[in-house]
Image (cartoon, rainbow, N blue to C red; front, side, top):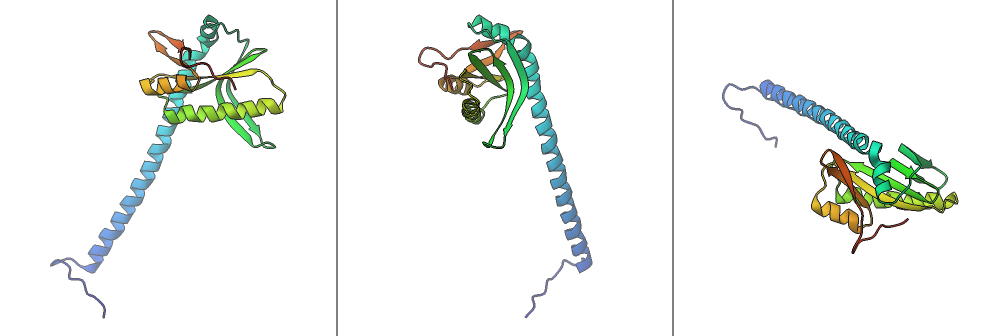
Length: 184
């Protein structure tokens, strides 16, 4: 037996149906706008990462020189796409010389997940280097505008150099003491 619906006085089925259709249209429009907002926020986040790169790269070699490193070559936005060995990664800043490579990941606000992702990147780079008979030592750094204390400690614990703002420039914190630079 079919169930009947009693509409409030004066409201027709057609009016209820029209309201349902309008609600459905509004929900779809809202979903479209949210997707567009997510896309724009993603672009903005990427732009902030680029700002971090532009802030640090010009003086990065000099700052690492202060720590005893002599990097001769600087690359930005390096991609590795080795389909034969399924090694794919992107590198924000890549500093190199004859015996060492420094791989710098830049983030506006680094997270533990970002640091873990950088560890995976370093492992891929080591594998790629070994495949190409590159015996240099690979070191890593994480640069950020806003570094939480726990994220900074975690990065240092994992053997990364930490690059953060210091007044009108930036500083590099070397993992030392109970932490030490990790070599891949």
